[in-house]
Image 1 (cartoon, rainbow, N blue to C red):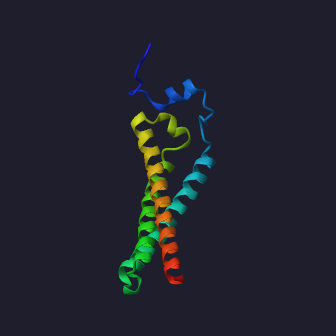
Image 2: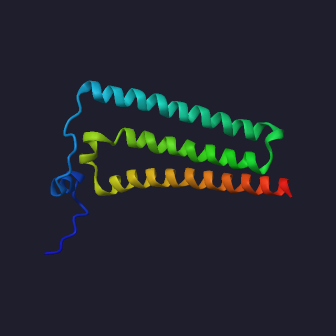
Length: 136
């Protein structure tokens, strides 16, 4: 019998897959996750904002390499936003998510990781090209 379970919450799927997840987090676990998560997200926002501001403000940084660094900082800044969403939708809360919110959470994480890795790849290629040109 084929059925579509698009209107179910994620606990329906967790129960069917026998996934081992925490049903409850103690108060200290929740506080630790939220404190560390908030600190790291604030650090991500602040440090990447400083990089973007430095590239935009300083004329010495108006070269392709620095634009790529600013682009990486922007990708990491938006990854920080995805981590905030993840932080409040993880652990026992993930069982109460709708299928759409679960896919949104997973999509934000996958997209932010892919954007950061793609930026690092482009920076590596640009550095390689500049070194090869310098050698010739």
